[in-house]
Image 1 (cartoon, rainbow, N blue to C red):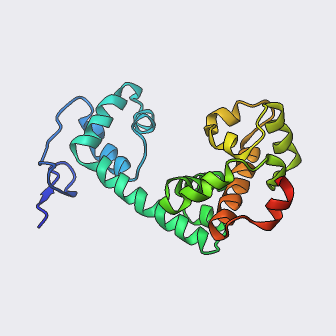
Image 2: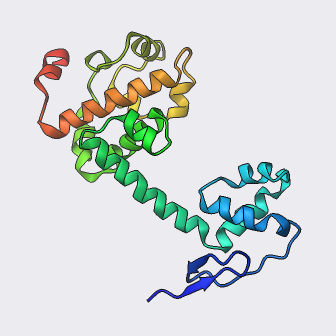
Length: 205
């Protein structure tokens, strides 16, 4: 049975192993605001700027750990992300989900791609998809040209790149990144559903 500890600063209850703790440092005048914003998932450096104390971000990060807020937020975010992925795979659109969860389509796309990469059932699909040439993927002309200029020729080579590396390609912006995520997701889903999609066979075999 979980033991609940009441925060002496704002009355918020948290579970063990975090012990009751009273912060009495220089940022105590803002403590209630800091704790509430941390529980909303706002990052320490943003909170520090919002209270006009940019040098406080380290202390705010410590408070997040000391009050057990980091672990709580991470768990809640994992649950939310899993729900977003589940609903998307069940047919809901990125735009609708992004609006409901206050996210961009790009962020929803990232969550779905991460799920496909990490999901054990996707491992075979990823291995099969690696040799598919980018000509066989449903990419926009701009995205395709940017990838070719960077000597990226296959889906496997795309998977070896991080988002940051892709965004460093000249003329490759967030719209192109979303386009690539969507094409990769569709390709992996196709391989998960059948051994080798016939339309892809014709393209690269």
